[in-house]
Length: 194
Length: 194
DNA sequence: ATGAATGTTGAATCATAATTCAAAAATAGT
DNA sequence: ACTATTTTTGAATTATGATTCAACATTCAT
Image (tube, rainbow over all chains, first blue to last red; front, side):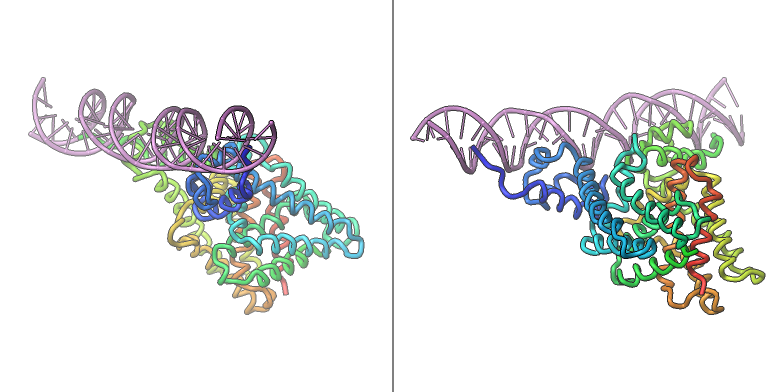
């Protein structure tokens, strides 16, 4: 009885990130992903039901990881809400800094998922909820301006960050990731402060 | 000799916005755009060379307009840099408020244009340059924190705004446009202030 | 060595939709 | 009314690539 060779599933995901980042989801070809992964085109379908399933997994893996790691930030009681927010920003920046192509894929292709039903995928919503709980904590503690809308803030910070990281990923020599995160932190921390 | 009826070019553009917003660029069908515009499928090609050309025109029309109208803000000397920024934010919000579907298209499909060459289309860059000149003015006048990077800021504000407007456009009942702009202005104006 | 079970392959199949273009329709000029 | 010119039409053509699947390859158990 034959055994599966290597870790084709992960190879396909890694290749998917590369090809999706280079060509965009819709113009990415399964044959190219297969080639990049070093397997036959038909093999892709043994691991993923279709093209969208690859993108979906990439997405889920990322946000699952960010959800897990951001939980560690939330439970800390040695830092205040603004500091938590800074850690959250750093978490996201670090994650994408390690994989700029992933940034490009996530930012530009997320809307190709869940086109029909959910506008905001549950797993992503979980992450937003974490950001929101930090903001609410900050407003309760009087660190964050109460007149600011949590509904807007929960999206604003992460959305801004994603947008900037995408730009950085496409042209990393223009501004460093450190410069980027420094500015984002400064503006948002200052802008949120009561 | 037959004369062209109506304004098919504009009909196609309007239909394009609707169909692209609903289906995304790649899944939007020319036949659907034609149907929405009230013309024959083949007629579309008498006005636009291909599908991308429609998207490109939509994009260019928008940014050309925003460029023109933002120029009026820039030349004013009765308001300071932060106020100019507020006007710029209002300009963008108003533009998309009048056409939420356009917001969805612009935000989600811009990256499908200029995939090969320019990362930032010249006409869009013009708009960013205007934002940048306001920031530089503010830094010179001591209204805006000098330690903030112009390279980051020029993208951050508009990028954030686009992202939020996209979310609003998809679900306008969740938070009003006024609430959205109020929060963005407050955070950025506060965050930028020296 | 043989057979069963499973993995892998890549050409073939199938589906899709962008685009083309010959035919029909409409309008102005005579 | 006829002709020339232009516009419009939508079925046909073409291109593309996602997906299928029969054939082949590999591994384990006997």
